[in-house]
Image 1: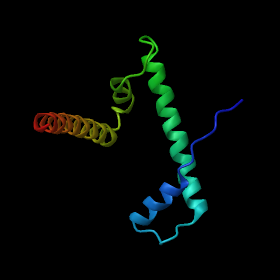
Image 2: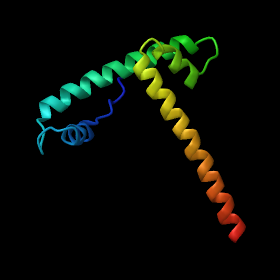
Image 3: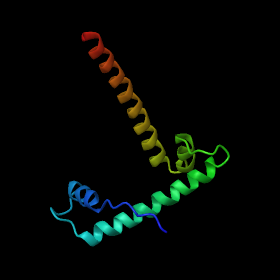
Length: 102
């Protein structure tokens, strides 16, 4: 039995519009992009799993190792991870301040 594939065609069409396509981008174009992204991400995650096999569980560092040859993707991933950490810290500060007021 095969797992059900996630379907992000609606979101891809919205991104296409946001990046200058028509108000209602063609569905077949969005499906083509979806298929390409799905296959690319599946392959990257397979490689990540292979890299992490010795530890038994994939970690962020394993994914970074797999994409490190593509400087643009690597730097963007690092930027997103840094931003995510900053958001986590800001939330903790906000939670602490809210708890102090109560």
